[in-house]
Image (tube, rainbow, N blue to C red):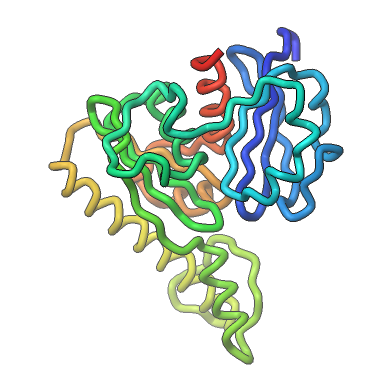
Length: 245
């Protein structure tokens, strides 16, 4: 990176850990490793950063980074740090760190009111009010979890790679599963977004931002989703790191 590296950003989620070096204003190349295999040696370039900004929903994996975290300033994302947004939620400590990072990023980059849809192991919806407060959210099964369940619990249904279906009428088992997964999942996301909009009082200017592994696939034919930002969580970590220096 041309400018001086200030931070190592680490987002530990259930399936994968994403990380990147960052300057004050820019996130560098995003790398990804399986969380189950996470060790300090896998985080290339980590020695360049004096500050680590960490979001983790897997405590055991975070523990394996122990010696990397020693001797450096570590900003662990939680409701206790400056996020750039307020929190209107009964138990702020229960909000996942990745969801707080998404909220911080969406508010800073796109404004409020806003809904962030994160297509990960689970799909999460996080809602920010017009006055930049985190209100709560929705958690539903992830797309891959749903299709893997069919494969695991039936004798003849295969494990499939997810892609855009040819049409709603499947001419093979695989095509039928793809139609059910993709069209059905878009229906789930669309209905949840519609209910959130109603519960917010149908506010004008509501932004819908998607991130996560299947965001581009699902959002491709959903006009309700205005923006796809694959690096939203790490951008949020960069923003939180700068707010808490």
